[in-house]
Each structure stands twice: as structure tokens, then as C-alpha cells.
Length: 349
Image (cartoon, rainbow, N blue to C red):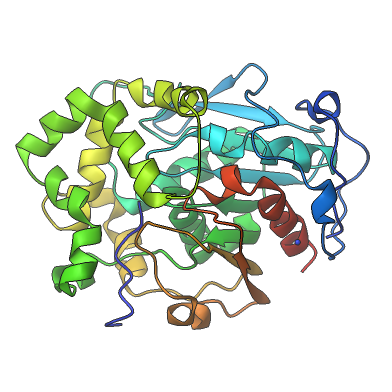
């Protein structure tokens, strides 16, 4: 989940809700609109209205063959939706048809180590460092001939969107980022947090050990379900909802990517030298200039910074929204209407 961002130290025209039949992926009602306004709560889509995407597509991009869902008109303005850990593209299963119905071309990729995404070579390092996930998405945009897109995500996906917006702003039209600014610094991560904050990161320390790696390998579904419960304590998800995502964790590279990600953050695993310059730039905490909306939920059980700690990291048009109603860490799946509203609003900035 998120990088340590330690504040100790350092909506739109309302998308009318649709019947189940009317929200199938790929259905459109006209060109994308970007007027701001509030959605009528009585018409908001109910989370869980959709349970699946159309058949996934695959494309070679960079070092990966990336699996992704696509919805909406091929000539619509592009939106790329980025999931986190331990989640997958189903976090956006209700968001995608809302955006497609507003005229957007919606791309929802499985990050490396998830779902149907695979490495093209068995010799490629199963690298989970922060910059490489962003490089993957830029490569995907190139492969799909998407010059510029609205990027929106949470957890690892929010950080990935942050990095693209910071390092390649010409590729990012606007951004929605759950929990704000998540670009991290390994140097800053050397500094200890107060005990209660350290406790929230228990799994990071578990993953630092060989016992933790073996434990995650053997128990990844139980592990992921526990994280879901902790991170979204008021989300009453059912087994079918969890199982759809759990299938994506069976990716043969999943454990290696997750373990490397968390060990790299603590300086316990090396990244690749070819990304050193990117990481140096990220470690400096670059300001993000693209229009941004940050979102936070009122019942996020995962470690996350206070909005006051990152507001100054956004120098373009900026707004912060708190999503209420017992919403947890997996905000797009728990509150899809609010997430889609934010995407359309920020596209109008």
C-alpha cells in the first residue's frame, strides 16, 4: 500500500445512474462532458452493480505483455485507471462504465505482477520499485498510441499516477489521486516513525524476512483478505467480490513484485541502475503541476497522510474531497460514483 509519507517529519455534471443493462462496458451516450456539479445521491450507481469487464485485451509494452480492460469509444478522451495492492482492475468495475457512458475511452491495466500481465522475458528482474511501475504505464500509453490521458488511481496506482504527472507532465492531462501525494524517498524511509505509525506498517517488516516471503507465497489470499478488512473496516464485501480479485494474485510474478516493492522501499533490495536518475528526481519530492483532485475516504484504515501534509505539492488547479459514508481504502470500488465524478470534474479544470 502507500509509501511512508510522514507528516510527523516532513464531482460534473452528474452522471445519471443507469439500469444494469445500460451500464455494460463500452456503451456510450455521447461525447465526454466536463462540467462540474454534484450527482444526485438518489441516482448514484450502487457499488457492485457490475461484476465483470468485457474480454481483456493484451498488448506488448516495454518489458511486459500487459492485460487490460477497455471501455467506451475508441476516439474518446483517454482515462487510465490504476489499481493498488492487494487489489486489481475490479476496483474500477463500476467506475469504468460510468466514464464510458460519458464518452471516455477507459483503459484499466493490470499492473506488473497482477492478472494477465506477464514479463516478455524470464531474464527480466522482477522489479517493484516505484519508478518502474510508472515506466510501464508510459510504455502502455505508447503502445496504445495514447499521447495524453487523465490518470486516476489509488494506493500503488495513485503513486504511479503521481510519478507520471511529476516526471512526464506532457502525458498527463489531469489526475485524481486517492490519499494525495505518494511519491516516496528511500532516504526518508530510513527515519523511524512513532510506534503507532510503525505498527500500521507491520506487513512491510514481515515482507522484509524470508519467513514473510514464504508466508505470503503460501497464504496470499488470506493475507490479501486481511489487508482488505483492515484497510476498509466498514466495507461489507462478499466472498465473490474478493474472489474475483484474488484470482489476479495468482500471477506467477506476483509475490516477487510485491516483496521487491516493499524491500526496495526500506533499502533492503536494489533497484535497477537504469532507473537511478528517475529515482533521484523522485526523491527530491517534485511538485506536480497538472490539474489534480485528491480524494480521501472517511474510514480509510490504511496508513495515509493528512491532506495538509501534501496540499502544497500540487501547483496547478487543485481541489481536495473527503468521501463520506464509511468508505475505506479501496475508494473507487466502494464509492464508484464519487470517483467517476472526480475524474470528469478534473478533466474540466
